[in-house]
Structures are given as C-alpha cells and as structure tokens.
Image (tube, rainbow, N blue to C red; front, side, top):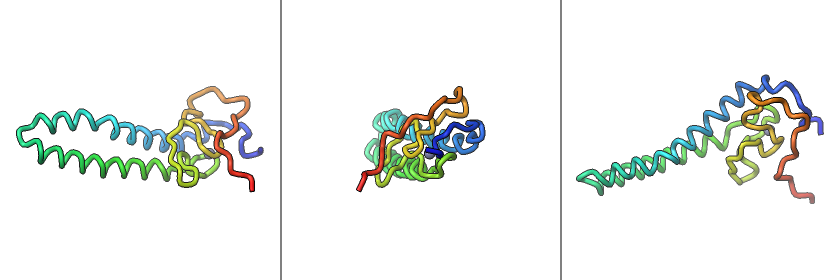
Length: 121
Ligand SMILES: [Zn+2]
C-alpha cells in the first residue's frame, strides 16, 4: 500500500502536535472530574455545587470528545480517532496506523497495518 510507505515523520509534526493537544485536553477533562467533585461535595452548599460541577464537566467532556473526533491525521487526512461512528482514542491513526509520536520516535521500517479494516462486500 503506497499510502503506508515510510516517509520523513518530522513532516507530520504540526498535525501530530494538534492531535496530541486534543488528546491531552480530553484526558485532562476526564481526570479533573474526581478532584472537582470532591471539592463540590465538601462545600457547605453541596447540592448546588455538585450540579454546577457535573453540568460543567459534561459540557467540557462533550466538547473535548468532539474536538478529538474531528482532528485529522496529517498523513492520510482521515479522522485520527474516528472510524465510521466509532470513537477510539488509540495512539495510532485508525486508518493508516500513524503513531501519535511518530515525529519523536525513530522511523519505523514498515508501518503496521491498521487493526480496523473495512468490511469486504
Ligand atoms: Zn492516518
């Protein structure tokens, strides 16, 4: 497959930086839930604060997932984490198997095949 042939991975750096930032934003939103909910539960007016924290967190989570879904792979141009309706935040592109740190690692002699393949009809 010509689209998976190894090329200079540093050429993908701007696109991979964008993918990494969106991944970090998503994981940050997921990780911030428990500490913020703990502070909300410890406050005197906890019912109000739990509602505020939960609604805010859900809105931020939906936003983070949406941004992570639409980020494009710099090599193949497809959505990096989305294959059809499925969102899978793996470290490799679901279409061409480009690693999220391909610009920081030694070049791969042979790019691995994608794990998700289109159904043959
Ligand atoms: Zn790709």
